[in-house]
Amino acid sequence: MQKTTILIIDDDPDIRDVLKITLTEEGFEVIEACDGQEGLLMALKKSPDLIIVDYKMPKMDGRQVCQEIKKDILTSHMPIIMLTGKSELADKVGGIEAGADDYIVKPFEPQELIARIKMTLRKTQRDLEANPLTKLPGNVSILKELERRIEQQKPFAVCYADLDKFKAYNDKYGFEHGDEVIKETARILIRVIKELGNPDDFIGHIGGDDFVFVTTPDKIDLICSRIIEAFDQIAPSFYSQQDREAGFIITKDRQGQEQKVPLLSISIGVVTNEKRKITHVGEIGEIGAELKKQAKSKEGSTYLKDLRQA
Image 1 (cartoon, rainbow, N blue to C red):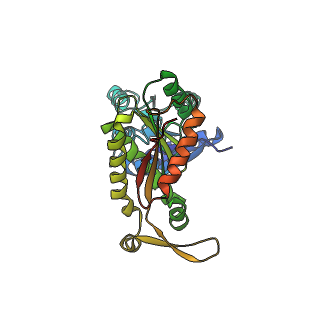
Image 2: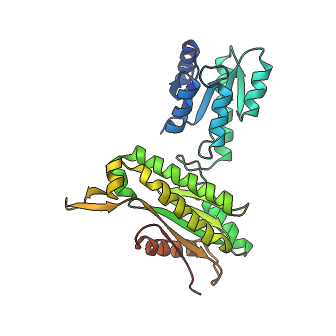
Image 3: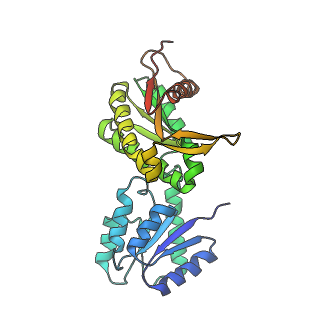
């Protein structure tokens, strides 16, 4: 079973040592950063389950760290406990205003700290059934959303999106770079749908490079076109200059033969109930898989809508 990871951000090595010993004895995995800038980078890279951050630090204080983490949609659900001075009321208020989930006063009692951590983790797990990489809603939430849309019997559009040539990219550049591509794709979906979609539109992460978003049929063309435009604009930056200039990467097929693989693109299959009645989530999945397969057979980024009548 994977351990819960806690990131400690504090410029005082003695405080870090006390925290590490206390948390390790409770079975947590601990990672450390000695200032706010390092802590922020580590939070973005390692995606810890919880962060403990000191309010007063050099380079970037705890309030600034908290603000940066909470404003990024992919890290905004990450729970943060702020460490404050015994009489620093302003620090407590500042931490909460910046988005901290809880605070604890130094010097602290280890038992109280552990209790606060467990309480915050329980609340986070209750509130968020999510993909661990992007923090977007996962399969349970996706299923519930699709069932809700069917029950409402209003026009909807369910869009299945995934990346073309992603396995080849992962094989050459490694999973860490692949994860960054997935997170950037999530950011594009969130940004575009927030800008162009409806207030109640939904975005979920099925897993790997597979995403789903739900909107209304009238929004589809603009949203899909903008997602493709944004992805195609950023995709070359995922590659080395040599591969970017070549426009492809060299990989080997199952027979060991070298082959040229184009740069990453995105394919979207769009299922709507405009021209057919949909009564079961399974229908959406089947139609979406077929449409996405057809979209992926085309060169480059594309989207394909279901226009058939039942």
